[in-house]
Amino acid sequence: MRESHKKKIVVFMLVVSLIWFLTSRIFFYKPGILDYTASYFVYPVISMQRAIVKPLLTFFDRKRSYKELEQQFYKVQKERDALLATNIMLRSTQLFIDNTKEIIDFKKRYKVGNAILGGVLLKNISPQEHFFLVDKGFRDGVEVDAVAVWKNCLLGRVTQVFGWYSKITLITDKQCNVAVYGVKHGAAGIHRGCNRNDTACLEHVSHLSSIDVGELLISSGQGLVFPKGFALGNVSDYRPGELFHNVKVKPLVDIQNLEYCYLIRKGG
Image 1 (cartoon, rainbow, N blue to C red):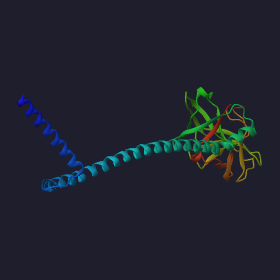
Image 2: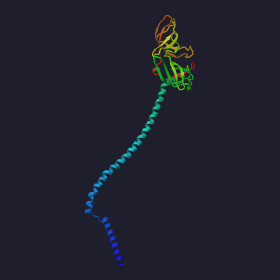
Image 3: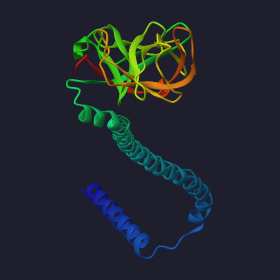
Image 4: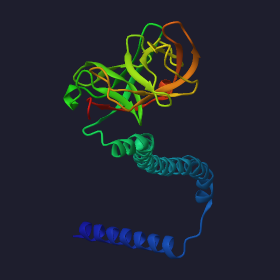
């Protein structure tokens, strides 16, 4: 019994001591020598923790901000690319309208029927041959011997037709012959190319016919291909001959800068 009583007293004393210690630490605590000594060891640790942790937190905050900015940048970039694509499309459409307005007006004015508007894909202007490739073929209704015109000027005729494109032999090609006449005196002849884009020849003009430098030459419609009433060029040089005049012609159209043309059948 005494042993049990002693144990209870010891336990009671321990509990009271613990309560007193906690109360004094909480309400009446004053740092002692041990605390001061420990602070010298704790301070460097706290300082190091502050020096290491704070930059890390700043780094992660910046990384998160950078990622957000990067995502926003890509979003703005996509929007810019979409607007740029739309702008390019609108500009291209406007350029096409500007470039084709005159020949569309020509189609309305001359009532050329089912004329087909074609864009020039390729130009071959060489001493051997003069031709265009245009982006219209038999899928679009183009036929061999269709005539190529630009506004009221004759360009050439279709000599080959493929599915997606056609070949136009130009009036400046030496294989292309067009029956023409001068609008001032009515002198008839054959316009023949000489594989130069600045000069053509007018052949078989009778020495009995009159013709002037600067006179406009118009297709007469004779033959099986070229229709009547389209201009080809102006007389640039004229020398009388015994049987036929020697006549040079300057083409009206600068074929080097041509981008579009109409393809029509003879008679529209």
